[in-house]
Image 1: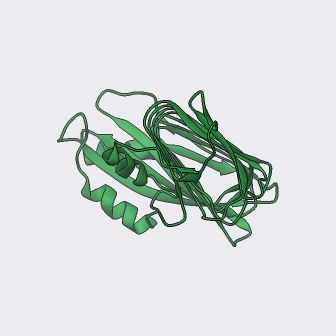
Image 2: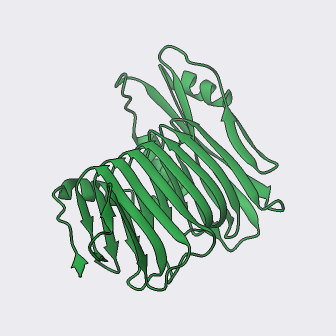
Length: 276
């Protein structure tokens, strides 16, 4: 018997969909135009903003990459057919004047070498702030260790060993594989699977406080665990009685295979198959 558990928060589902894998990626030129057109600040409408992009290229010889998104920086990693790692570091600074914002940007130092990407800059200043976000292209088979703090994290089209952490930000996975461990503390979790089964050891993805949405192909084989402790549920899966226990659904889809676990503690759960 197929169970479809009613879902009462359509608005929340739409919000989660906005973060569906992968986060919409802008070109550097589009990002610069948008950044420069936004001369606002949460602290003061009069603050000036400086925006710039710094490109870097790294060797992928070690087949692993560590990225520290820092405070308030977004990270988007996407697999491509190239043999090297390409990084676009997108720097934003805000200050009382354009001259001060430009000077602040010169103090921001991006390190992109030896399989590591991070940034350093001045400490907190009254009326001034800075952040660095990254758009990164990596070979499709690459091990990743990525963390963001107060910024979104998205990974798509990559297979490898992954440790992914987003603290206070959305986490989005699309068409990934390997041995993937993904956590966000306060933010939505969105996962889109591809193919007919998971390639690799499995996926363990969890958010503590936030909605979860999982999209998987119609004929997908896996040992699946999904669930929420506190939140409404909408699940488009063929389930037998007894598979829902303790806020978790555990079931075998198709011929089984590698485990896929996508759960939340506090937030709605949505699972959709095919184009539904």
